[in-house]
Length: 361
Image 1: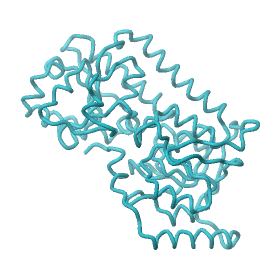
Image 2 (image 1 turned 180 degrees about the vertical axis):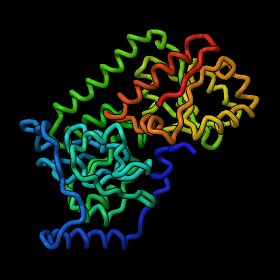
Image 3 (image 1 turned 180 degrees about the horizontal axis):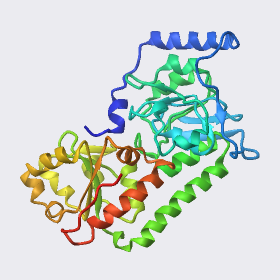
Image 4 (image 1 turned 90 degrees about the vertical axis):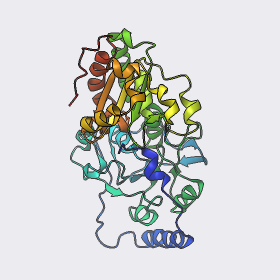
């Protein structure tokens, strides 16, 4: 099954009013007992070389539920969004708590980001099953909660705000889980007072995309799509980060993609819309190549498409680090992805069905 970001979060349902009450009691007791006992959670540890900008605070960030003002440099950051830890680490800030998504890396820190820990303790991992774990978040004594790449509801936002620290929710300009990686990086940089460094990081990745486009002018204007075999054929919309990868390399998405998907990050296609898959390049996020080939090979509608006949497919295994990086789409994972996906896409669109699209490590 493909890892779809909102599937776990969409399961989130509001907890009872009793949970809110217990959260507030806990938050109050933590404040009252601040120095009592030894904490089992990691202390905030910031890497050298990521100085806070002059006059960085106070700063106000607009979001889906209003605006949030941060008055001083945060020292203990918790991420309720699923990928913001990468931007924090890139900026030299190690969060004290992160929300689990992929569920296979210690501290939810992928191999493309572990070098940024610089010896700091791993953050505590939080779950999102029925919404944020309010009590555990409060117990971490955060001074900032970030939920940019999230599907946070208004009630969940209000409950988190009751902990008594600034909460930055997802922006209203995009669908839930739709904030682009570059904007997420810049907003995280603003929130922790490192906007200058965030801009530098974003430019470095954008330059890498630009170099790939220069090296592969054949990508320009070609149509491409990312899909999975989750619940039939699941395709990712224009606001999903995986689609942004293709667009940043010069590809264009199907013109009617969002009309089919609606205001979601993606959607399973009906049988009559299998034609949407017929692209110059089609990137499949799959469990295993053998299973995907079995599923696709049995579908006469799919095997009849040119993309299948001319072997313009790229298969990426979800279980591997590469597949995880493709879904993560962050300032740290993208360079890792670009190095791997560009040769595969070049092989897929070269016009020769005999060209093998080789797996990437």
